[in-house]
Amino acid sequence: MSILSTQIVSALNNYSTITPLMVKDLIENVGRTSMAYYSSGKETKKYEATEKFVDANMSSLFWFGSIPFANKVFNKTVFKSAGLNPDVSLSFIKDSEKTQTIKNVLQKISLKELPENIVIGKKTINASEALKNVAKNSGKFKNLQITRTITSLLFATYLSAIVLPKSIINMTQFIVDKKNPKKKPEKTAFNVTFGSFEKFVNKKSKKKVSFKSLQSSLLEKAINAQKSALDGMAAMDIAISSGRIYYANKREKDALKGRSAGVQFAAAIEKFIREAGAFYLIYFGGAHIKKLVDLFTKNKLDPVILEDKNFVNELKSGMLSINPIKAMSDEKVINYIDSNINNSRNPFIKYAKKLNWIETVKDKTGRVYRNPIKYLDVKSLRENFDIITDAVPEFLKQGGENLEQFIKRKAKVKRFGIYGNLALGSFAVCYILPKIMYEFRKRYTGSNEEPGIKQVLKNVK
Image 1 (cartoon, rainbow, N blue to C red):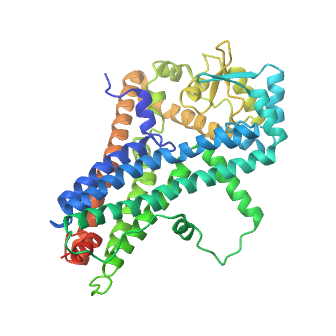
Image 2: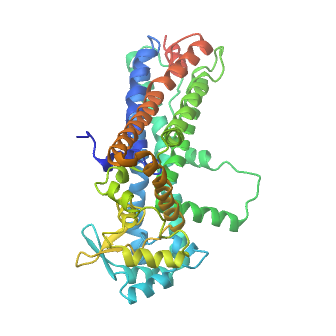
């Protein structure tokens, strides 16, 4: 019996979601704090470990919670007062092919192919009314979605890239001053103001950007933000890293006033090494390793498919040999999905629902439908179905008469690859990367002490 369920393992292997990122981030927090205590110099290790502990955990809190919180507030106030449902896909408005327009969806609802009332959680939503309101106010809806994306990101950035690093530096300064009350050092603490935030985000560019291109870019960002939290979190992570680098350098620079600098920008450079490395390992490293593992094992299938109890029979019967939507137009694909959504004998639809390639809802009677207020990514669906059909010939050839045992081995290897990928990425981000940073510190400064804190402590001696 497997320790983790198939769904959890599948989520850990999906690098277009935040699940594997959350695991790596939590492990990184432990590594960052412990490495600071054991690798930093004797004078600064307690201060640095405390800073890392507070920074890591508060950053994670802001990273995971601030954008959803800001979105929720915006939804409950601005969208509610405008009478618009923020969950309606913005892609309906942007659809250049005009195959998935609100008009088309409303027609399907009138023909009873899609439900008028849908149940999401404990709420019943009138999908028809929600879509009509967006259609009547498409310009306002688009602008509100863009505004929400920008507002939420700015709010999150202010907390994590301005307030947090300043507060941590002020905290250390307070502890140092309390332990050394006789001598008051030059003021190095920073006030947290909105003025500093404006200075941080309003760096003027000489390059002119056309309004249309800017609006198009922002619309794309808003669409991506609706689909996944990753884009917003990546942008926020860049802001967090920038704040850490900027304020680490500022503290060191301010503490050095009136004294010989020795080495230049030590705190900023070591922070940059760690932040750049962590950004790659958390956002891209896992996906890159996944591609290599899939290539080496010749298996791109998700554990949800491999471990399905009917998968072997579906292979043998030829039910997975041909992609049913490969040659269909987008309009025909949508009709095919809607007419087969409750067809339990269609394995492609079954896996699409299990893996959330098609988002489904229930009506008041409990019948399952494709979610009428969500845009269906037909291109991605075709590609995912192709991955299944592409695997079939090789599996049948290699499995032969022992196909069932072959698939079980494939499933075990898949799990091992997922666990190994996550373990390797976590080890790199919580141990190898900090080791590189501390080795750089020692070689660059000639000391294991944290550069900024070291200079602050020198001021009170």
